[in-house]
Image (tube, rainbow, N blue to C red; front, side, top):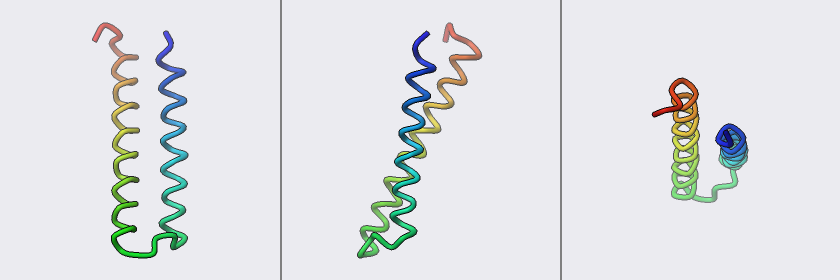
Length: 66
């Protein structure tokens, strides 16, 4: 099965992006509140994608016929 390597790499990349964007938000990289809100939305979307991927992998591992 190839999905564990793919999903691990994808989740690592998502977590790296989340970390980078979170550091940007914390360090004051946003010049306006709109930029800050947008960045928060990006972080939220990346976190949601990560959660969906990890849930799917967990489901596939417990029942590969699904």
